[in-house]
Each structure stands twice: as structure tokens, then as C-alpha cells.
Image (cartoon, rainbow, N blue to C red; front, side, top):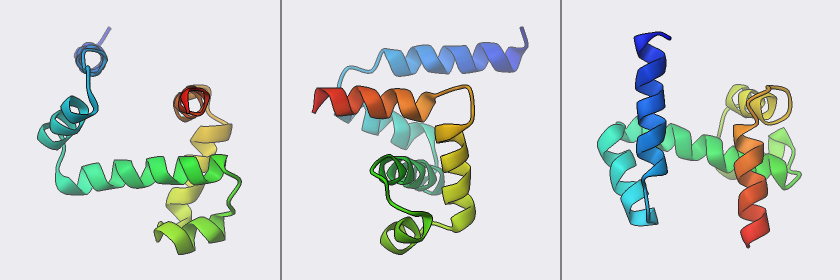
Length: 96
């Protein structure tokens, strides 16, 4: 395995050790630049909106995201094998 893969695994372990929303917020603030954090938050908003059935245009108007970004999130939500967005959306919907 590459050093990069080990570094990502270590980061995943760090995420798994987070116990509260405040800890998650503080870790993300330390880990990312404001622009990176805003981009991640925007992608999560897009994933939620797509999951709720909104169209690309509705999302563009509501969130202000580019159609390219919306399309990228949609591809990962529906077509990619990782299922990261889908897993968390399902998990959060089941706990609401």
C-alpha cells in the first residue's frame, strides 16, 4: 500500500474517533481551509437535495452551486461504487 493510502486510512480512523458534532466541527475547521470546508458543505447540501428529488436547476437556484458540481455529486450519488453519500443519507434518514 502507498503512503498516501496509509495516510487516508489514518484520517478515516481519526474521523471514527469523533464523538460529538462539536468535535467534528472543530476537527474540520482545523483540517481544512474555509474554502475547502464550504465546498464540502455545499456538496453535502447538493447530495441531500438530489436525494430529496430536486432537479439540477432547482438545486442551482436554491444553493447557487454550479451545474458541473451538481452533476459531479449526482454521479457519485448514483453511479460510483463507493456509495459514500448514499450510505450516510440512508443512515441519517433512518435516524430522523
